[in-house]
Image 1 (cartoon, helix red, strand yellow):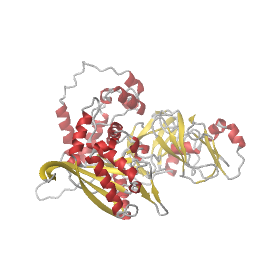
Image 2 (cartoon, helix red, strand yellow):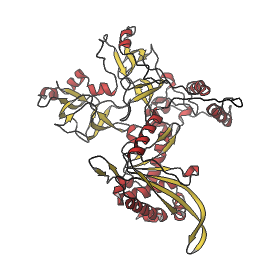
Image 3 (cartoon, one colour):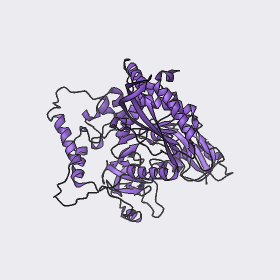
Image 4 (spheres, one colour):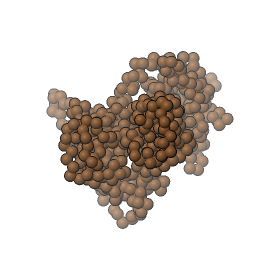
Length: 541
C-alpha cells in the first residue's frame, strides 16, 4: 500500500520548508535510508531520507517550491499502484498516515514487539547526521514525571559531529528514560517513553530494554566530573564556560543584537533562554559583575580542568576517560583515509612579504579585517579553478571532477577536529571569506555546527601557523583528493636580487591522493598558489 510522505519538521522553529534539490525522480526505486531530497529549513539545508521502500510514485513539491510542514511531499508505493485518491486527498491523508518519514526523523515510532497502551509513544535514539551510528545523551532537559508538549526540547544529544537539541514531536508525560546522561547507545535504541500520566510502561521498557553492553558510560576523571556539571547548571545566568541553554531563535536574535547570552536569565524550562528573554533584555548598570574578579574565576576554571592528582614518588597512576563520539569518528575516518588513499606530500616555500603588505593595506580600510588564512583560502579557491584535478574525488567506477569549489577549514575544538565548509568559495570575496570563517569557527567551538555546514567539501585547509608550527603534513579529509597544511610565517635570511636580506617565508605542504592527483598535477597547483600569494594583487584580476 502506498505511503504518503509529508514535509517534515526538521527544527523546533520550522513552519515551512523549501525543496532545494530532489535526489530521486518519479519512477526511481527507493530503499530505506536513501536520501530523497535536500530540504531548506529556517536554519540550514538538510538531507531528508526515506524510511520506506518501494517506487517513488509522485512528487508533491517541486524543486524551489516552499510548503508548510505536513504538506504532501511525495508518495512511495508499488510500481503501477493507483494513487489518485491519495493525491486528491492530500493533506487529509497526510494526517491519517502521520508520515512514517516524519515519525522516523523524530525517532518516535511504535514498537512492533509489544502493543502500546493508548496515547503512549516510544522515542528512540535519533539519527541526527548522515554518519551517525551511535549517540550520547549529554543532558536531559526533562525528567520522569515532567509534562512534555510538542516542540519541547527533551535532551541534548552528542553525535559524531556536534551536540544537538532533540525536540519532542509528541505531548504527554515523560514516563521512562532509557538512556541516562553520559551513556551512549546505537541509533534506534529506546530513548524515552511518553504518554498519559500514570500509564504503566514497565512491560514496554522490558521488551525494549537497551543492551547494557552497547552503552558506554562516560567515565571522566573524578576530579572533573562533579565540578563541571555544577558549573553548567548551577547558575541561571549561564556563567561563561558553562553550556548556554537557549533556543536557536534566541541565539540568532542575540547575535543580531550583539547581546551576550551569559548575561540573560532564562524564563524557559530549566532556565532555558527563549525569544522573549532576548527581546526583553535590558542591560543593567546596577549589577556588580566584578564581585568575583574575572581572573580569579578564570583561574578556578583552569584549576578544575587541569588539576593533577598527587602521585607519590616511584608510583604509577593511570586515569581514563571514555572516547567521545567525535573522537571515535575522527579515529575511524582518518584511519580509513590513511590506509586506503596512497598519500604523498609536496612542500613549497612562499615569500610572504607582499602578502604581509597587502593584508596591512586591506585592514586599514574601515570595518575590514582579514587574516593570512583568509588570503590562503581565497588563493586556494582560485588555484583549484585552474587545476580541477586537485578538486576531485575517487570512486571505484570513476573520478569525479568538481567544477565548484567548497573549501573545508579545519578547526580545533576541545574533543578533536571539525571541518566546517565554505560553499562556493571561489565566488566569495575576501571579506565574505573572513566573515564566514569566523562564524563557522565560532559555531564549531560551541559544538553548534549543523550537519549541512560540514558536508560537501571538495578541498581542505589545515593551519597550525598560529601555534608556531613551521611545517607539517595532514591526512586527507576524504572524499577530497588533497589537503593543504599551512605553517607559520617566519623571518629568515633569503636571497633577493643576489643580496642576502631578511625575508618573511611560509612553508605549505600539499598531501595528495595518488589515485587522482599525479605529482606534476600537485606541483602545478602549488606553483599557481605561490603566484597568487606572492602577488596578492593578481587575485583581484
